[in-house]
Image 1 (cartoon, rainbow, N blue to C red):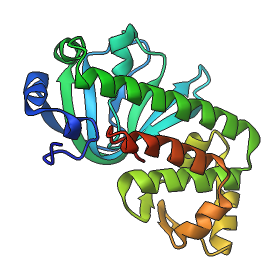
Image 2 (tube, rainbow, N blue to C red; image 1 turned 90 degrees about the horizontal axis):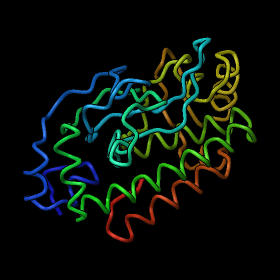
Image 3 (cartoon, one colour; image 1 turned 30 degrees about the vertical axis):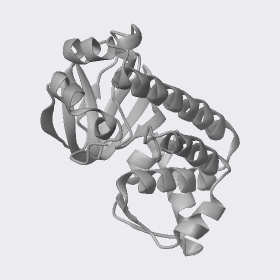
Length: 236
């Protein structure tokens, strides 16, 4: 295990594999776009800190989130499987830093069918599960339940009880209106679970928030923890 990295893929690679990836360290500011719909993928990203988001964009400007990413991620990994021009946008919701490798170099490492290949496939499986569970959740559960789920998943990835998200960002994340987010945040705040002001959310009672969340939070958390148990490191 490579203790020089926090990213769950990089820290499980051999020094030789890391060297072959020719990693470039970089800052990842909020709103930085890692993948643009319709544009050819040029780089693979490994987030060390911060929070990324994958969203589907519509012609009227509407945006619905399909998944979030933290230090467990390999961004744009679908390029290894033939998706050169993606349909979804991936951008940073919370600033952080990480590494990138050119697609040409990373794909060469992937084609060795060694540890990097295995970890990428396991990550894709985990993200497919997240996307399907999130889609079902958005169609079934209340805004309060979904907000609790979202905040807990963010907390797991940034290791902090303080999350900087605006009403607008939360509305886009949950696929709902800002007024609905305001009402849901008010409910969670009245219950003493969060404190929310000016884009800053403090989780006052994570255990209580977990009880307020829908079943999807535990489903996602338990599923992704299985990867840690088999030494892949994909625990949220």
